[in-house]
Amino acid sequence: MENAINEILHATRGRILESDIVTGKNRELYVHLEEKDFETVINFLSEHNFELAGLFCAEDFDGHEGHMLFYAFEKKGNEWITIFTLPLRMKRAMSIALTYPSASWYQREITDGFGVTFAESFDERRLFLHETYPEDFHPLQKTFKNKEIKLDAETNPSLAYEFKKVSGEGVYEIPVGPVHAGIIEPGHFRFSVIGETIYNLEIRMFYKHRGIEKLAEGKTPAECVKIAESISGDETVANAVAYCTAVEKISGIEVPLRAEHLRTAYLEMERIYSLLGDLAGMCIDVAFPVGASPFFVLREEVLRQNKALTGSRFMKDTIAIGGLKKDAPKGTLDALQAFLDDLRDGLKDAVSDVLASTSTIDRFQTTGVVRKELIAPLHITGPIARASGTLTDTRIDHPYGLYDKIRPAPRIFEAGDVLARFETKASEVLDCARMIDEAVTGLRHGEILTKGDIKDGYAIAPIESARGQSMHWAYIKNGLIDRYKIRTASFCNWQAIEHAVIGNIVPDFPLINKSMNLSYAGTDL
Image (tube, helix red, strand yellow):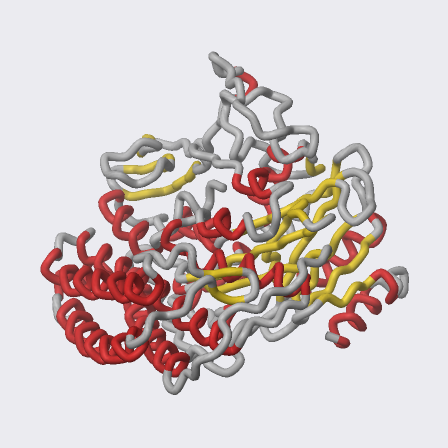
């Protein structure tokens, strides 16, 4: 951490004082930044391979009136550096999207939520506020109280969303969604194609914005655990653990060892059932249901194990601030370990059958390539990044819980296509089983919950969900949640699909989409 502090002090030529750098818990730095030093520090971080992991806004933060921006950067094996600027003048800031392309969605999100605008931004369209929302409506401001929103009966033409246009001989558009034939959530995909070949794709989400961050405002930290669980149904444990970790860091609450072991097992069980669903889905989308069936069977068995362990197939109402709400019933951990042996054997057979299918490999190979050079600029994480030759895993880069002791095996594939994502996810299921074994082998009985006093403060908690890195930041003021910011892996990873489909044919889009299995709900908070 000392190296990062010295580098920042050097980059600003002493204009930032050490007193402006706050050292948080668990390798966290907060840097108070004046406007005159902003561009210098941003360029320095970019040149030294710090990735933008989050950008968010808070109002009336820590005694400062007005809106304050937080720029969260990470470097593998290094600290999280959060730059927070002094209160904004005239609610306007400088865009960093030309240096960090992933900033564009964040900036548009902040403009919608708080009314803060960004100078020299290349995209100022609305993000989560669609055309029927009132023009001056900014629901994350303190002045807005949760209530029924009166939407405009007619769309204001000036607010109409303009999709990117690709012109040329033979180019036509195919709109898909936002309402789909299945039971999936809404999302709009606008293709520009010649024949069946895709030349451009633009996605538009946020049709079911739920106001989760506003909902947390003013609630007790304990009440917000259920909100964290509801961010995305199949990331219940990951989001609950990340949120509770942030609160535990703020309050100095130590989680009991038994609870840490069980949390690790539950996190990896959640990862397993999610990845098994992905493997099955890829087979379904190339009309290979026979290949998909074993994965579906194994996934169902994992969900039944979850039910036995926690009383919930998706392990809801299990994680608590300070540990766990309930212990695993007697005998369930032994049954789990016995099941893991069957899981390994069944998975190996199922994967072998898929890889032996030449027609399936023909559809998977070279399809939907995510190029390695896109990973850092878009902050793509999880299996998508690891399948494209980039070893990025929050459990390794910034260990939390027991992951400094029970470590994932570093696994990467280079091709970046659907086949690489299939192989990455299959190998990670086996690795998850190994880590669960380590977490529960010889686990002794003991306390599962530490009850501690909630303290005021703020902290960031990154976590590796099945889809990649999610980031939770909590700010507690007067014992209540004043600001809760969530950025799931899907928020960044959705942008990868716009690049992955280029040069592929339209019928391959469902397969490419399924191979990433991104969350609509986890994006549209």
